[in-house]
Length: 224
Image (cartoon, rainbow, N blue to C red; front, side, top):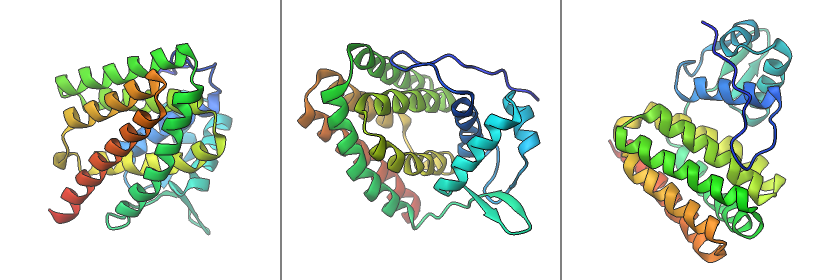
């Protein structure tokens, strides 16, 4: 099955490269466990699934290798990494520091268009949660991340946080029965409102509250 290629950018973003689109499509399939942990990764199959060429798919896969989402094994090729439940609290603790930094700098540096886009993405998350549509929720979550990262203009922080976000997204799909997306949507919306307002202190508090939510979710999984 070939997925129709979408190259449109969210408001507040510039035109996206084919490799970035490929990355998002493949990440979504991995996060949603459509490509299960431990599964082999075949470049040609992914090019067909994404509707993109093998060159952008290859670049996307190499990025995933660099962040540990995909592992390269000698004589066995590429494989999707496994999920380490007990390591996930460390993932969140590290992400907490980076998200506070990103939120505060985005509050300070975002353009008017990016502030509006953040709110629009957060509102989509709330509406998706009200409908109980996890796929739409995650799509809006991913779009919010893109705008937030572009707004903060801190490439070092973004480069460090993206692998952690991917792990959190995949963890959510694996254990979604323990979560409550309405609560998650409200946490994202509060952070987006704070960033859009330009209040750095409130933006940091919003990021902190969002990480609290993710930590509570992880602990429910671990204690289950």
